[in-house]
Length: 218
Image (tube, rainbow, N blue to C red):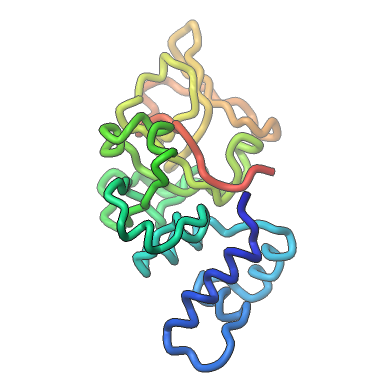
C-alpha cells in the first residue's frame, strides 16, 4: 500500500540533494511535480497520489519508480540485472481525445517491477506494450482519471470483447468494445452516465487492448 506521506518525504530527500539551501517544503515538492500548491495540498489531504506527475518527475531525473513506490533500495536497483522497461508517453492522454500516438517521439522509459512483467505477457512481450495516461471519468469505476494504462498493440481483434484504445475522427479514446451480431461495434463507457455508441468497424482504428492499469482505485 502506498502512503502519500512516505512518498512526499522521499521526494523531499531527492530535492534536498539539488543543492537547495534550507529545508525542503511541500511547496517545493508541488513545484517539482508541476502542481499548484492548492492542488498538491488537496491531493495530500485526500491521500491521492499524483501518479502521472510522479512518473514524469522520475523519467526526467532518471530515478527508478520502484524506489518511490515499491520501497526497493537504490543500491538494489543499481545492482539488479533484471530490469524491464516499456515506453511511456507522458504527454499523451486518452479518453477525451487528442489524436493518435503511434508516431509520437516524446516518450520516456518506464521501469517495471519484475512481478508486473508477467501481467503484461512476459518479458518477450514488453516490446509490444505502451503506457499512456487516462483523463476523464467515462470509464469509472474500471479506469479513473490519472491512471496509467498499459496497451498491448498486438491485441487488435475486437471480435474478442474487452477494453481497447482506439482512434476515430474525433481523437483518441479508451472504451469497452463489444461486437454486435450485425457486425457493428458497441462502444461502451463503464460510467453509465455516458450513452452507448454504435460504430462501424471502419470508423475506428484499434491501437491495442488495455491489459492492465496503474493508479488509484476509488
